[in-house]
Amino acid sequence: MTVLLDRDGPVAVITLNRPEKLNAWTAEMRERLIGLLREAGADPQVGAVVLTGAGRAFCAGQDLGETATIDPADHAASDAWIDGFDRLYRAVLDLDKPVIAAVNGVAAGSGFQYALLADLRIGHAGVRMGQPEVLSGIPSITGIWAMWNILGRARTTEFALTGRLVYGAEAERLGLLTRLVGDGEVLAEAVRQAKELSALPPGAVALTKGRLRELESQALAEAVDAAKKVHAAAYASGEPQREMNRFLQRSAR
Image (cartoon, rainbow, N blue to C red):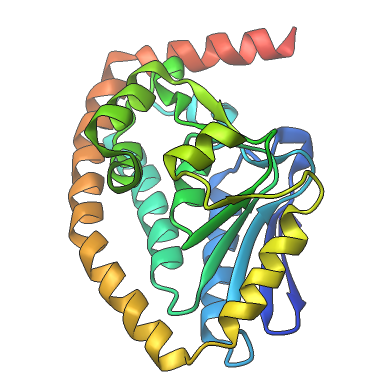
């Protein structure tokens, strides 16, 4: 299984399990992840959710081997790709239970955005986080939405245009990580924190999360609409496909 669901008492631990690819995900992985998130949300025995990755990465984002083959003229395929992320992101945001990201390694691109959707993010000093999509010719549109409320305009612009990744200490200073712990302690600390949050009055938690969701929902809808237009234009130019193929060729050497 490329996505796993485990239980630790009242905590559901969802793990991306493709360590040989730094947990870079495919559409099939994201569909399974959506199903497991909904399963955890509907389970009355689950009080909180922890998101993490196997091996040395949280999630390196999109598997470029999949998106490099998108036909520049196939707008429906590009739209479906964006819609898949919309459903994934909403599956996280729709959870009325606390969500903690145990960021155990690199979190990049859409994997970085996925981490930012969590209510709390725990990592270690060696973590690397950022939005390097532009380096592969991919416009960062939903990435701007995910970063904006945490980083503000200036830092969001920097991350979106430079594609640089920051290490754990800077990530914590910027608010991308809530807290730093020792390497090897990330998952245990995230589960401990999740158990603590799962003991809170669930009605108050759900209503609080509902209001937070209201504040983000319209902005996400606008980001998804913009992403469809921008990605259609980008893929029609052929630039993302060329840059992704260059990356894949370098990686294969």
